[in-house]
Length: 127
Image 1 (cartoon, rainbow, N blue to C red):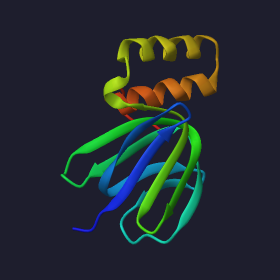
Image 2 (tube, rainbow, N blue to C red; image 1 turned 180 degrees about the vertical axis):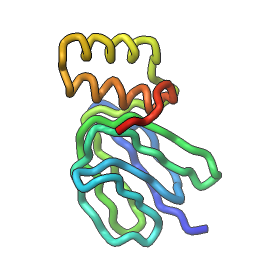
Image 3 (tube, one colour; image 1 turned 120 degrees about the horizontal axis):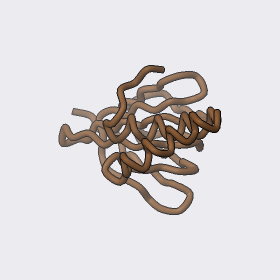
């Protein structure tokens, strides 16, 4: 099966890199799936989960908040302002942040907390 090379980088660190068969990310034009051989693309990332289906049939999920996605020559770069792998997310802390954001009517903080919970598997999608 064809593969693409993925680099998921946050402002402060390399979050994940490796071979994948498909990556789905939320961009300004909606959810975008990138597979090997995709036409070159440069997109603005929206706050949302990024799902990477690895070459060994595993799945990596990250909560990504802002940044850019660039694909060319079977190399995908995801350059995020903030990115957290699902297994790094403290679900209880994210749930508290979601409740605080709802109390303060902060829609941006609420969306960030929801995405963290989605990525960690602690919240079902409703958007």
